[in-house]
Length: 455
Image 1 (spheres, rainbow, N blue to C red):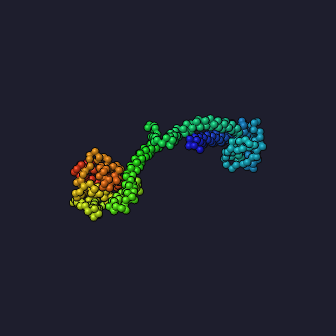
Image 2: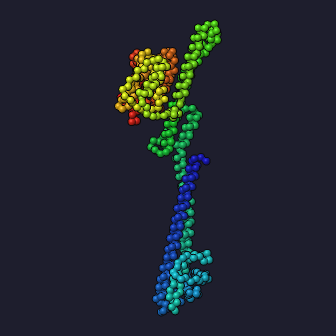
Image 3: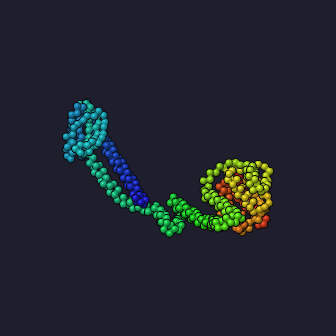
């Protein structure tokens, strides 16, 4: 069953049930009030008759006295303690009441009785009879008028319920259409996206701020993310294909050269093996970096803890110096702590150390300090620098400032892009400053009290 039909059905059933409950409640309340009122009336009338009889029983014949109090549609009688009827009077319309069995009551009572499928209001009061004995004065009165009124009320309520169901069903259908309209629009947009392959957004009514508007906004946001990710994916695949094509071509060319002339020319063999080995290493590094960049932040399993930055930088610099025989000068006057992930920070430092090594011949300088209570690590080199026009692009994937020189030195164009991903994951802000022909300075700012310093 479609959602619109479910809403229509459930709403209609709910309204009908509420209407039935309301009408039944009205009928029961009205019926109880009418019957209670009739019981009170028969009781008051019986008390009045008992009072009049007590006052006039010695002056007037009891039979003549009771005849004056016979209800229009009922019966009056006096019952002795042995349940014998001393005196009784019945209206012409209710002669069948004379056949009803008599019953003596010890105290006052009033109730609704049923006799021969007809309902009556009944009341009994003990009184002192002319001979001094205690007898029951009983009045029985038909409530046929009340039954007729209640029957009419039942018919009216049933008709009202049936008539009210028409606008209820119509309104529930209108309501279901209003509720499902944004959903239908979303379904139509999804089908259009599936058919055309183009990303489309929903047109939202900004006046409405309900859950349907929120759902539409979430859908549009999701479409924007999908579009952005799809465009990035296309660009990423195109760039990756282009970058991988070159080392594969080089490997294929040298392998073909080895196949044809490698056995006869040892120097060509060494050159080819070295080139193939170099390109294979570059491809492996590129593949590893691509896999790392493809991971989401929550898949990195970060272990954020307080780190002593001078100790961590010194340890990383020592490993780097031993591997590449490059001097790294660390300048720090005090212990400075920051909340970060140790392994990711070391990986970040190695990326910038490696860039400084590739593009400069002088020693690398590292400053560790604080700016407005925010710890920072500043890495300086005296290398070729980066043109000012290229600074905004250096964190893009596969971007290289000097493509020929970078390729010669084994760059993949992914290092700084990966550094940006790592920095974002461990909440580090990177600031890059460079002057062509002078050198490059990279500053890593660590947040202090959940904010970075203003520069």
